[in-house]
Length: 428
Image 1 (tube, rainbow, N blue to C red):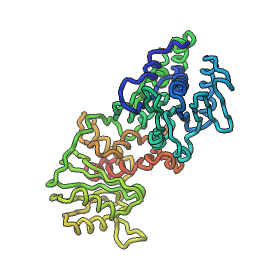
Image 2 (tube, rainbow, N blue to C red):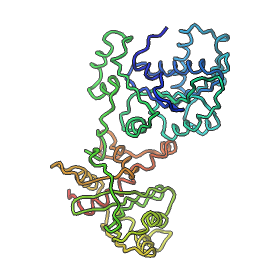
Image 3 (cartoon, rainbow, N blue to C red):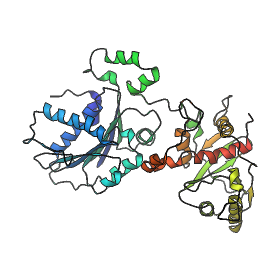
């Protein structure tokens, strides 16, 4: 009945032998994203009698108005009759079939309510809209016991989405750090031969060039636009060996949840971030103990840099954060020294100093990050300005509740930039 596009067929078929297939159909407007996902859901329900599937999106209105509607369109096109070939139970938001298969339609706004499900497949509408933590939780639900007659069965998580404007978790999971059983299928709108004539040409008149590339040609966005850190490339990411005889710089941000410290070696002109401490609900003393645990045999001097406000006494201790660190390090036998500014410079100064080391106007690269510094790299790729302003965007409490990773925005960058600004300041 259907003559599928090349990208749709690629999405439906599994090219590997792993027990779990994870795929995202990344397409432009009108590229057949939801069509393909709902078609796959119905095919799985009929091929594997008794399978339980979950179809969801961040909001239920999106599930109801887009995904569920497309499921019913497929059922009508197949000539299926409600009450005979399938049943829809609106009170339970569940689609069932005579062979015992069922598909649940839910929202993901409260993912904890889904933790009791054992599933054979999951379909995610607008995958880039859900938090990464929700995606990981859904992965853990892939544990329905297969029936003996399910020949060729694989657990499947599949989603569909437009390309991300920001370099989010979908890009990192399916492009940067893709596992062998993770697939991203790119589907430009221009490849859909079933669209009205001149559809794409009209969109080209309507959208600006960048928007057209993302939402019609399905190209990944220009992720450096609006970012705080400019010109950071793979040339800045290298494997950095820890040297126990060199000075170790610890640059600190003293937020309690999370507390973020960057560990680095430096030369006269270059800085090398080789590790990071990123701990939730902790204390300065515990973070310091973690440094000692990781590097028990350090022979060089330890130089403590960071937030100038850490030199103020708190209401809970007679010592400043820096005195606590120095005393703790000395207890473990380290030679420690504190080097901080009398006060923190404006953040724009730190940003300029950091960017000048990432890549100078002369093209010199003097700032390097090891892949172990995951939270710092997350900030480099995602910390951005509020559109039309020079203010840095920070997530709300509600956003952090839905995606814990967001709590690490700004703090690792602050810690790293304090060090750069101390040794290579830029006066404005």
